[in-house]
Length: 466
Image (cartoon, rainbow, N blue to C red; front, top):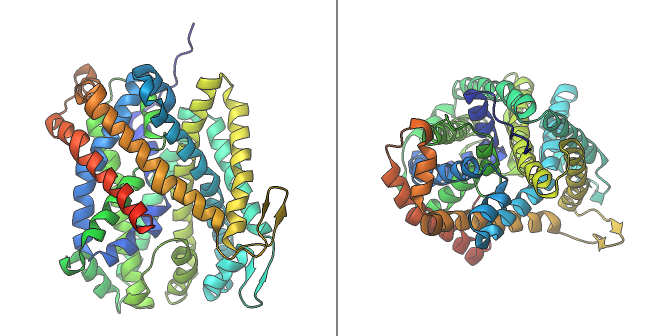
């Protein structure tokens, strides 16, 4: 007799887990800088429209595919149309590569939490030099060393992931997100209040985010917003299909998709209203940036110039921690479901082995960030002057696997399996789908066009848009 598939214990548990998956580091350390560069409120308007017209339809698609088949992302396409099995495999490989480096970035976040507890002055004064030192580069002396500290904290981060995942879908992932996501929103509100009440340039920064400046909008702005919205929602990487497979038939997929995308967008917007005014008030408008260097380097100066900066710095990195771990456990869950179902393994050894393997591979990502002189039997990093491993991993996921997987999903549902089947699944047990017609148009035309533009832009310019 086939074992009954585990399901979410509650609707709120599923929503918080799915929102936790979508809410990642990119919402907090990339979105504010992109919003600033894209004209403040002008970027917010464009971003929101893209989420509604592309993000939500693809979310509905992935959740429906998962619930309809009750299988992992590869099993979905093997059941519905073997010709599209490659789509599932692209999602699995993408998730695996992301988990390898995401686990180590999560370790960096943990290290900063510890630093703000034990040596807040050093980390705020150190700026980028403190970050470089964590990664194995002494910027003052110009020397390289093995980043034991960063790797040790990555091991702790992955161990926490493993602990949560071992408890299963409802007992681990759902329970964690019921605590983690409310905590994340509470911290966001605290930081928002502190940021907009800083005085000085904070009001100017807030005004900038609320006033559309369409003079800064060009074709690149639309592509940037499209990439940010798409990648932010955890689409195309075996997550939402897997989460959908645990979803009871009584739950409304269209309604839940809107809520999940809404929560994710809310976090991104709140992050923008926190970061931009805070930087305006402390470092000046020209200092607004994005990415890991900004989050781990420049923001130290923001917290240093802020009253009780050590406290708010600590809160910020706790916020990053909740965003990072809620995303990493969702990525891992998609992989665990795939391995257990396709290779008939047990959850416990699969989870442990996956976390260990991803941690070990991720070490190459961390050491490549500082170009450590490291000799291994199969690779030599001596003299390397750029983070080639990290660049390769991010190229493979952001510019190739993830968008191609999502494009395959949209083509399959829009033109092969047909939107009518998604609509039928989404309206199971009487659920309403008032915008089914718009969904069909978006999944057949708008979403594939948008994803194709991401691919073309990425390869034409050599840069990522996520």
